[in-house]
Length: 217
Image (cartoon, rainbow, N blue to C red; front, side, top):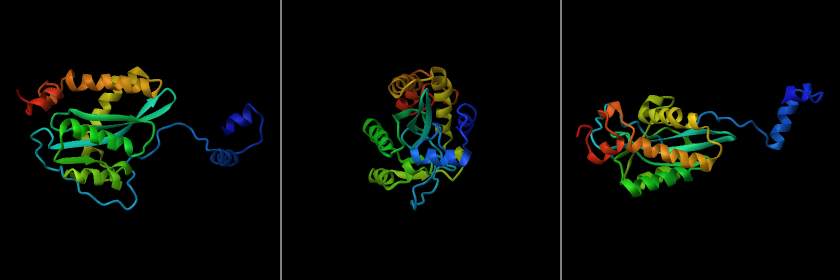
């Protein structure tokens, strides 16, 4: 912006003045904000429960995470709950804000449609460490597991899901707006759950493994 004003408008301004005026007017660039995993201030510490755990059945462990969905104008935020045994997406929600309500909405839908997991694993982002979310999870008698700080591999299956979503759908579709993205992602998750075969599932679909309770039918 400083170079634009200096070169095109011949205004005698410097970077500090431009930055100050932009702050005062609430103007900022649209871009992915850093660190979606910033915790809620003073949140309760939960251990990572999955190290060395044998995951042998559906609804034993769910993982959840939030990712950015780029749009032609700005970004939306996608949360999903994934069954780790089957890789089945039990629920997802798209939002234009990072308020915890969209995570609670997806959690409630997952429980209503699929029951409760024994363990729910997440990162230490503010949406998952705030009392509204942890209280809801604990009220369902679900054990909370949280990744170590900066250890994305602790939630590896959800990270792999994001890679599939973005490279197989989002980057190819270049969604213009949230309603279009919501419709497109709904079609993709239907494909992902019911038609996309996984080598790690012995080339079965997540839906088949989730319903059958085994990876080898």
